[in-house]
Length: 460
Image 1: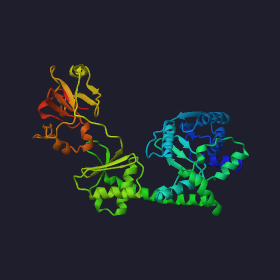
Image 2: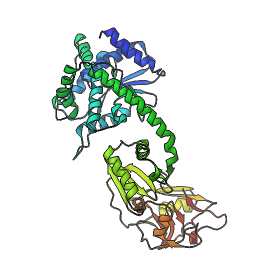
Image 3: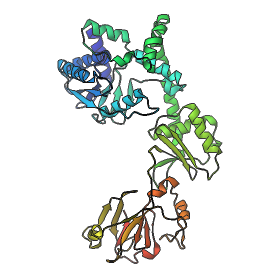
Image 4: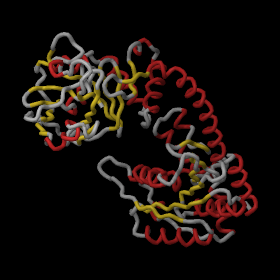
C-alpha cells in the first residue's frame, strides 16, 4: 500500500465521520508497528486539517523493563510526526484469577479516556488480523452474535467515540508499509509469549489458517460484520421492550428490574431481557451458563430466600421481587456504633445562621440537615440535648413514623419502606439524648415533629 493509498484510506474514513471543528483526535500510541503506521497517517491528515487538535497517548504499564525506553521512543517519534505526545503511567491491580491482559486493557482505557471530551475521537490501530483474533477468542468463549460481532469500526465510549481506521487493512499491508517507508517501531517481547491467548492465536494458529485459506481474515471480518448487523436488530427490539421491565427502587432510587411476570416469559425472552438489563447498567454480559444459573435462582428460590450472585465485578441481588445489579465491593464491617455530633457543629443551624448543614459520618451516608417551615419537620434540639447518630438498631425497637397512625417494630418498618437488607446497616438514626427522633432518609418520629408552620429540620 503506497503512502497516498494509506493516507487516502485514513483520510477518507475520518472525513466520513463529519467531525466538528475543534474536536480532538486522540491516538492510543504504543509505538508498535500498527500504531506507528496509524500515527504516520494521522500526521499526514493533520497537515490538511488544522481545524482539529491531535494527541498521541502512550500508556506506561510498568510490566516490562523496556517500558521507559518505549515511552522515550514515542516522544521522539511524536516530535518527528509533529504531534504532541502524553505519557500516562498506570498501576495494575493484579491478583488471583485476574487476567494481566484484561487488567492492562482496563487501565489503559481509563487512562486514555480522561483525555477525551464528549465529541472527541479515540483512534486505535486494530487491523483485520486483530479482528480475526477477536472472533476466534469469541468462539473459544462460546459467545453469541454480540461477541462474534467482534470489533466495530465505530463504537461509542462513555466519553467520546472509538474509531478503528485500519480495521479493513491486513497485518501484511501494515508491515510492508512500515518497512517500505522505514518507520522505526518497538517490539514488545511479551508478544512472543504464547501463554497469552492472543499471542497463541497469532503465533501458532492464524499462520496455519492463512496457509490453508489466505483470505480467512477478510472473510472472518465479513462474518463479524453480518453478526453485528443481526445483533443491532436484536438490540433494537430488546430496547423497545426493556423499559416496561425497569423501575426505580423505592429506597435507593437505583434502576432495578421488576420480576413481576418474568417467569411467564419464554426462556429466550428471559435471556434477552436480563442481558439487556445488565448491559444497560454498564456491566459485562455473563456467559450462557452464568445467565442460566441467574435465571434459575431468580425463578426457583423461595420468595424470602436470599439471592446474591457475583459475576466478576458485578453483583446481582433479589429483593421484594426486584433484581438489583451493582458493582461488587468487599463488604465493610458495620458496627452498632454511637456517634455524638458536637454541639458546635449544630450551632449555625440552631441559631439560623445557616439553613443547611452536611456532616460527614464514618459509617453510611453524610447527615444532611436543612431548615424548613412546611412538610414533616423535626424540632431543633434543646441546648442540653446530646445529639448522636446510631446504626444497626435492634429490629424489635418500637418506632412511630410521622406518616403512620400507629407505631411499629423497626424491622417491619424497614421492610415496609422497601429498604434492601444489605443497605440497612448504612442507615443512620438520629437521637436526642436516648430518644430516637429521625431515621435518615425515611421518617421523623411523630412525637418530635414541629406543629403548625414552625421552623424545623426537614429531609435534605
